Length: 377
Image (cartoon, rainbow, N blue to C red; front, side, top):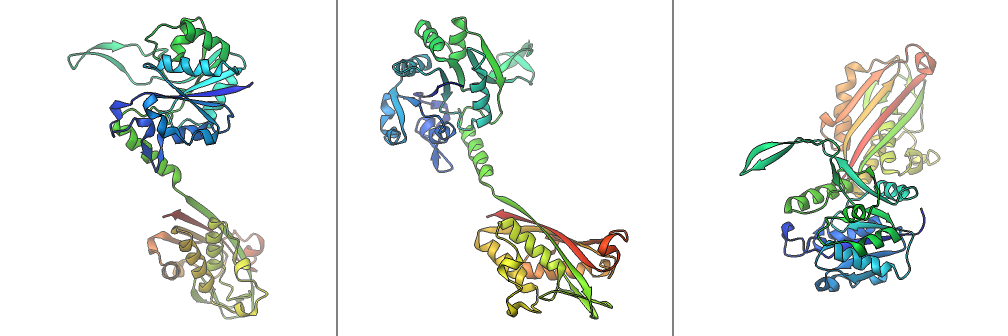
């Protein structure tokens, strides 16, 4: 992709966004808009930010990050030209020109624009217009406009450096973006696929949208899976999901062999990426011999809370021919919910057979699968 420099345009005043400060300096989720934008280009060693002269104090920390700061002009075209002239002292092969007020630019779009410059003099992301277009007069519809071949322009707009520098040096005032400047100079600009999230923050409502998007990005939802097996042996009952069920045999294990509770416990540990029951309660430790499996499940739930998670749902499927689970399923759900301190409606216990196949089909033991969902709170 050659040597690529990044030019961030941030000299505007952003009056429509309100808030007292130019929009690039206002905060979203605790950080300035421009900081989110710069993070997206952090992998590039050469970044130049074009600022209004009155905003230089806001950028005192940029130098420590290796970011160059220069003064912009009265219009976007002048600001970009200033940035290109600065880069011309040591010209890169390519330049990507991006609006500071587009903080949600993705790596895939950046890569697409960069890669397009291998075979094109210019490239820019855009989205086709899908809504109907009207022409209006005095707040009334005066006609319609054909939307065929119409696109919504985005940034970064990328170019072969020497070509866009020459185009800007020859450009007249009034161009809306760098693609317009490039086309006026005879440069063909390839369209790459843009993204809806790459919108330009312009209004107060856009700040609300941006804050909501960042909150969604920070949401931490975990899913863990568990699987366990216990074989039958001597006994007159089994314990499944905390409920004692009379049966002609018992389940064998180091603890009470509650295969249902063990599996849900492992699913919670898995969602936390914190091992399994054997790591937290080693079978080599005799204090856990014959232990009530509720001890293990309570530990997993406490660990989830300790790390800021809420268990929102568990689903447990017991696999066996006998004993029959259906008559006891509601009692199992209630007991599991009690131990996990959850609503019964969020605890699922069900059963299936293996159609007489395998060790469960031969009634040699019981298997269990479980899933747990955790949400950061």
